[in-house]
Amino acid sequence: MTAKIFAIANQKGGVGKSTISVNVASDLAERGFRVLGIDADPQNTLLQWSAAAGEGEEGLPFPVANLAASGKMIHREVKKYINDYDFIVIDCPPSVEDPRPAVVLMIADLVVMPTSSSPTDFWSSRGFIQLIEQARATNDELKAVWLLNKAKPKRLLTKALGKAIADTGIPVLKTSLSDRESFKQAAAYGVAVSALSDKGARAARDEIKAITDEILEILDIEQVKEGAV
Image (cartoon, rainbow, N blue to C red):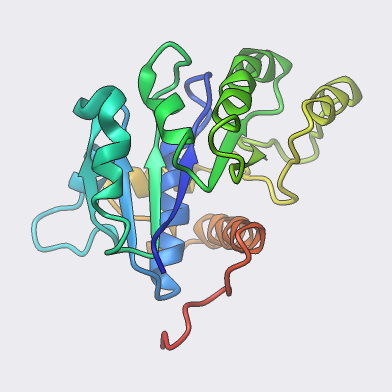
């Protein structure tokens, strides 16, 4: 099959796009899928994460391509890879003025929008919904979901925020990501959280696996690549 493309994107910065990109892409690779990570953000967090592993260390289980300089022509560069991978995961810049997110949405199968349980983070994200609606004018197969990130234990979305998210017409993934130190440690080592072995990392890994399960279900793809060991 040609690659399924999904973007991790939002208008708001600091909501964990790169963390989610790295760890979901890693989980897909560990399931036997051929995965390419694409850094479309000029901040190059994905690229720096990949480079953080020391010489001779294993690092991330997937390659990263830096396409941030491609600008509004990024879709042409992405399409060069679609026959070589099962999944292409794109870490987008946090801006609706930047041309890259809008162009990526025109070729994506799915966009995952991280938001925290803070109403201000969600309010800052609403402008991105317009980009999705515009993209669907030419890409009517584009699916979109919210992902609650940096969730605090025993702290749930307020009723008002829950209603606001529901009113967007875009569903929320059942699994949320907790605010765990393990994700920061993994970034420092240049690895996915699945490469760490402490209790917090194991819990984080389980959350990532559950999110990946949901994404594969949305895309109607088997949880593990056929023939993978």
